[in-house]
Amino acid sequence: MKIDFVKLYFMIITSITFGYVIAGIFTQTKFINWIGVKTVKLSRFGIHPLLSHLPIIYLVSPRAAHIHASDLLEKRKIKPTDLYLTIAATNFPMRITFLYRYYFPVLIPLIGTLAVYYGLLRLLFDLIVFLSVMLIGRKLYRNLRKEEIVPEKVNVELNFSTIKTGFTTGIKESGKFLIKFTPLFAFVIYLITHGIMDKVLTVMEPTLKAIGLDNLCATYVATATISPPVAYGLIKIMIAKNYPLTKILGTMFIGNACFTFLRAWWAYVLPYYFGLYPLRIIAVLITIQSFIPATYNLIMGVMLVKFS
Image (tube, rainbow, N blue to C red; front, side):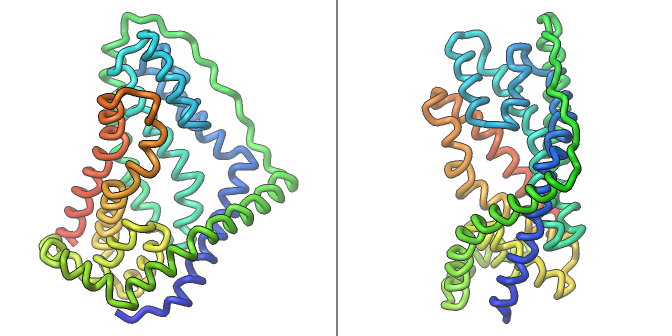
């Protein structure tokens, strides 16, 4: 597998810089806030009345949302089950906001409509969970008084000033991304060019062959475990080599599952919970927000690869 790493690097940073600029403009014009409010309004129909505002708080600051929920738990105003249902329901509006704010603006310029298919398939799981929670919650809380929620009114502000500010913000965010991305990219390239990645893949080979992944797909999975943005560039190579759409999507799902199982849950999710909840509650919350979605991604990935 011969790869022009310099070309790959500039292709990635060009696409992602463009994506950050678009994301910055979407944020400054309040388009993202408008989307978030529209989706969050749905959450109140199946969660505990005292937690009705939690999805809105969560979109602004997950840490603040958990501090609020932890306080209610400590005062025994809610039960752990109420919190679990709320967090499960919150994943859906949070995913939609994430797709519009970060995922689509960054990945669509890089890999095109493939990013849309991948994003919608991931959203499908959150939608199923959301609808299930709504059914359970409406039955569970039907005798509780629902306080009337009036979401913040958001108007899209599309003008030269907001576009200029969004553009500047996007360039700055892109610069921060490059500072973190470049060393990771260099590290992954070092692993590949010095044969270290090949040794790792050799150990994984029986499992990878059973799933149906070749060396390029396996390299994507291993790279995604370290840094998903670095791995995204390999998708362009798969597209150029005319890999089946389902195989590329399956590889992306498996890579995401490995990233979550091996890194994301303790590096990104656990810090929000640590010190706020008892260990048993932390374990359930991490299962809801990380392990169950990752299991879905793994199953979906294997199925897509098998049927490609």
